[in-house]
Image (cartoon, helix red, strand yellow):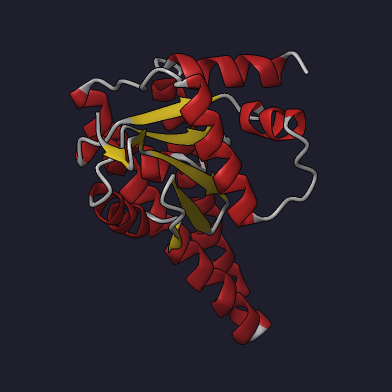
Length: 199
């Protein structure tokens, strides 16, 4: 067990579309990285220095994927928790305010008290999903470029730009379906998807 002043090191990560907000408990460090494959890799490197016992991140519908795979590659102990668990915990201790930092703090505190089991991934699935995420990121970048080009260029050339954009969007949707299928082999992700189906 790694400790800081005799207390296990738990790290909470609040995840959004664009950013990973990270809180280290009990030392109190807080920092952020972009939620991209590269940003997640950099976040994993920064977290490694704290020698965490557990990194807790919520299942948020693919937004957590970049970091989870970066953490597994870096051999860091990561636990994926069902969406809402940490927030319900925060309410139970009287936390009503909500910011990225407070959410990350609550996730770390939740992990310290509940000690959720670590999420395991098979190496071959890890490599495949990591590769798919990299391709998805590239497709997203190209899609953004085409959308910007659509705004700048005259309507006379919109048709081929839209065709390229449609192809990219189809590829992104196909990649998402493949990633979702692979992710169902992880109990925490499967439970979250089953919950969403029955809502």
